[in-house]
Length: 205
Image (cartoon, rainbow, N blue to C red; front, side):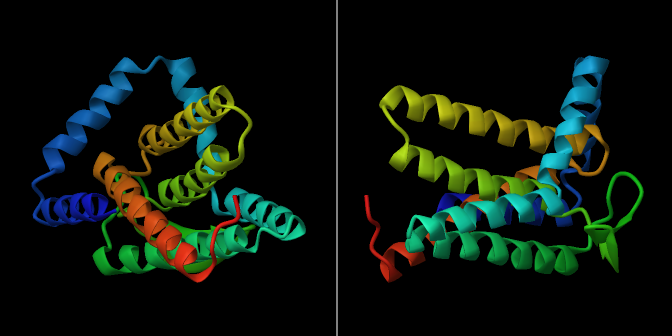
């Protein structure tokens, strides 16, 4: 958790000092060059999985399932992870106000525009995806069938997480450092929520 926080602080400092501009541009150019057109289109389509609408719907479904099975400790953690993550991302965007590599957009949800600029740092799509997928990985590791099933589910979820993150670069909505910062602060927030939840509510295995 602390390593992730340290990585986020380093990336933030270097980005604010404009020391990562060359890295961002070269990596974006390299990804565009090495990714075939059809792969780029397929991966770019995955970016919708990290949209606010999809994440809200999936979170609500998972929350209801957890409540139905009386796994209140996980339901509590899911609320902390998701709601806290959204607030954290919003505050960081407002704090740093980094412009996007493409056109500036506004925050939208289910077709409603909040008329608030959606800044680039850190990536909201990536944060939402990393937090929810990390939660699903936790459930898989603790409650999936055998070891093989745990490994398969974890690898699939990690691949999905990676593809969504890369898609944000390919659609020219984020710099690579926006993605790295989002992943690192998300890992920190996830384990912080896990620690708090386990102190408040003992886990039933």
